[in-house]
Amino acid sequence: MKQYPSIQIASNIPVSDKAHELSLKAPGLAKSADPGQFIHIRLSTGSDHPLLRRPFSINDIRGDRVSVLYEVKGSGTELLSKMTPRDTLDIIGPLGKGFDIDPGKRHHLLVAGGMGIAPMGFLGRRLKSLKLKHELLYGCRSSSELIPPDIKMCRLSSDDGSCGKKGLVTSLLPGRLEDCQDPVVYACGPWPMLKAVARICRDKKTPCQVSLESFMACGVGACQGCVVRDSDGGYLSVCDKGPVFDSRRIDWDQDCVI
Ligand SMILES: Cc1cc2nc3c(=O)[nH]c(=O)nc-3n(C[C@H](O)[C@H](O)[C@H](O)COP(=O)(O)OP(=O)(O)OC[C@H]3O[C@@H](n4cnc5c(N)ncnc54)[C@H](O)[C@@H]3O)c2cc1C
Ligand code: FES
Image (tube, rainbow, N blue to C red; front, side, top):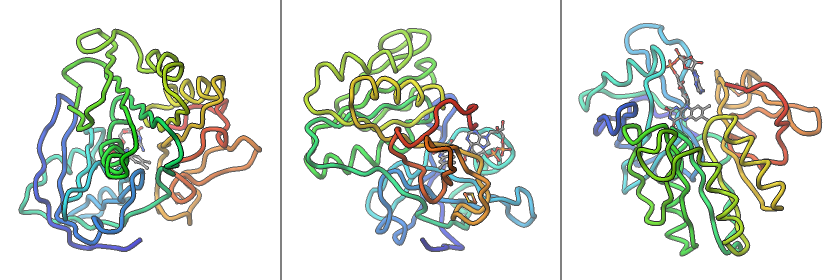
C-alpha cells in the first residue's frame, strides 16, 4: 500500500444511465494491484469536504491505466463525476485482500449484481491470463443500467426483463452450479444478493468468496469503522481482512451492513 498524492485523470465518462468510468494514469498502482482490491480516493479539492476518503474497487488494469466504475450516490461521487483530465487525485492503494484464485478449480463463476460488476473486469482478465475457464452471471435492474462487461462468456438477468432472463441474478446460479464441474464462485453486489449466493453455495457445497461493502474511514484497519460480524461471534474489518471473504466466515443474519 502506498499513497499517491497526485494521480492524473485520463478520462471520466458515463458508461450507463447510472455509472461512470474513471480511468487513471497510475503505473505504480497498475503494477501492484490484484483483483478484488480497492483504492481509497480523497475527493475534496481545496476544502475539507468530504473529509473522509471514498473506497472504490479496481475495475480493470490495462498497461499503466487503472479504472474504476462508480455510481453517483452523494456529495463525494457527485464531485468525482465533475472531474476532468485536467484534474489529479490523491489516492491510497491498492488496499485490502482480494480474490483468492485457486488454479486447481475447473470452473470459475463470477456473480455480479448492479455495481457489483465493478471488480469483475479485473478478475476476468486475471483468470483469462491464467487460462482458467470462467463465466460471468450479471444481473441489473434494466438494460439502461447495464455496463457492457468485457468477459466473453456472460449470462444476463434483469429485474424488468429488458435484457437477459427476467428476474434476479441469483436465479441463474443453481442451474450453472449443476452444469459446471468442480466450480468456485466469486460474488459482488448488494448484501441480500450476497446472502442468497452464500446460501446457495453452502447448500451445493461449493466454495464461495464474497466482496463486501461497508462504510469506511481509515481504510487500513486502524479505526474499526467498517467491521462486520463473523460466524464465530467476533468481528472482521472489511478494509484490511477483506473486502473479499470466504462466505462461510460471515454472519449472514446480521442487519444489512450498507
Ligand atoms: C471496498 C469497497 C469498494 C467499493 N467499490 C465501489 C465501486 O467500485 N463503485 C461504486 O460505485 N461504489 C463502490 N463502493 C461504494 C462507494 O464507496 C460509495 O458509494 C461512496 O463512498 C459514496 O460516497 P458519496 O460521498 O458519494 O456518498 P455519501 O454522501 O457518503 O453517501 C450517500 C449515499 O451513499 C450510500 N453509501 C455510502 N457509502 C456506501 C458504500 N460503501 N456502499 C454503498 N452505499 C454507500 C449512503 O448510504 C448514502 O445513502 C465501494 C465501497 C467499498 C467499501
Ligand atoms: S475503515 Fe478503519 S478499520 Fe476499516
